[in-house]
Length: 312
Image (cartoon, rainbow, N blue to C red; front, top):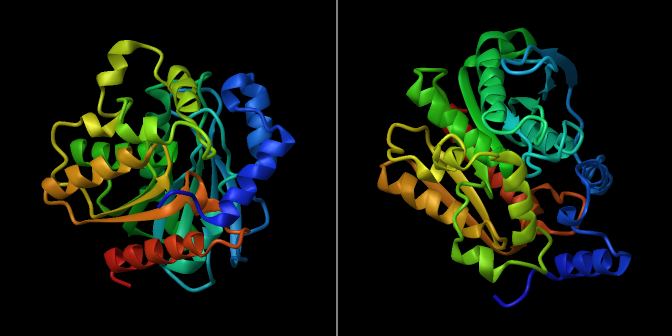
């Protein structure tokens, strides 16, 4: 396929005409404001109830923000811990709201959305530690919100896909919560110069230059770049991990990050399904307010995989 979906081409052309600047050309604060403005805030379905709360952070005075979504009044429901993307620097509970709502309704599960503290104020390893703390909190407390602590999955998109994969690794390594599934949507898995980072370097939304900008703010010390909790593709052993769904986009610099991680999981005899949407760009999973069937298909197929893993 030579070009992205026509609707995405139109969106990219509009952004180009408006002169939307690259995050790599902005201050962190300006990039965060732009990200919040561009994110969909009203595309998700209604749920029966939500809660906003704070839980202690293991690394910072600032707490971890959580938003819990319950699809209905019955239960207990299986539970998905959802971790938003944004290059470890951008994003919030608000930018993740539409996807969290959609996954709660489509999967018929409680979703716990994690508002972790961001880089560069909180670089690696702060964010993996916070997301794992949120996972432990979920396993201990989600039954009070209608969730089933014995049926838990993790998921995330982009940087959140990285943090979800890392949470699954740490749960295995530290004998932590028993996970039923990991949903990894165009995850960041390495800092290596994979071919898709050159082929899709610019012109499709997320650029390779922006990826480098994010990496510089997240991994501040070169020795940390070799840590599999920073980049899970560098883990020597991926066996014993929960079943996985890996979603990628054909015009995404991170295409090969997801492809190679799925291949490594398969080689380690992990039950993995890799879904590649050839005409899509980075971020499409959350573009639920656009006329793009692939976004809704990806949500539906992710939910089906989660339901199978939950046994529902």
